[in-house]
Amino acid sequence: MSISVLLVDTDALLRTCCATLLAAQPDIEVVGEAGDGARAVELAERLRPDVVLMNPQLPVMSGIEATRRISARPQLSGVRVLAMAAPTADSQVFDALAAHACGFLFQDTEPDELLRAIRVVSQGQAHLSPRIVQRVIDECVLRERAPEIPLDGLTPREREMLVLIGTGLSNQEIAEKLFLSCTTAKTRACRIMAKLGARNRVELVSIAYQWGLVRRRSVPLG
Image 1 (cartoon, rainbow, N blue to C red):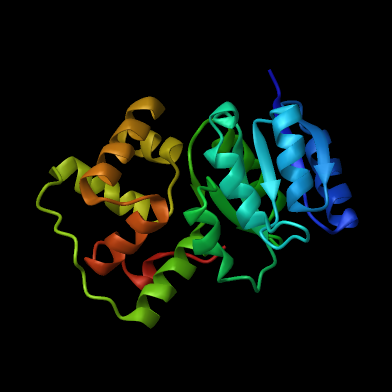
Image 2 (cartoon, helix red, strand yellow):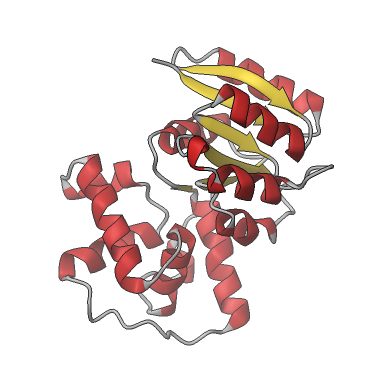
């Protein structure tokens, strides 16, 4: 069964390039395109795609608001938003993930990473590339926040997993590294978020950095 994707961006040429790339994949199908946030919400309701590839900066309704509305509607619980913004739109990372996007990419990402992100997000997992993790860590450096969340409630295994999340690995990659099933890795990640009061994986990355579990230079750029 193929992964259905809705492309949302004001740039028709970018949508065409993405559509061409995705159409060449045997497991991915582009089911629609939109040029503004309001149209994205409308098509998401009608088409129920597995993944919405959404630019946060859109006319009529912002991609952030469109993401928030899609994520808030119970009938669209199976629709997952993957944000993809201009390389200079650093501030959009936190806004998109706070609106419950399942991942974030920049438009200059490599095609292989885009394909990987779509596949990961379609499985209900979050995607944070090393570049995004680096932006989160840089933000922590700028804010110079002291750690406020105790890690005493985590088991040694959960701490180990938090380190891997902090370096930007997906649940699938963590599962392979720790010899777990993907379902078990996802369950443990959710348990860690609940214990630490984190809303998403970006906050887990921030916590891991603040506690010194990952270092600024340990995250590769790519």
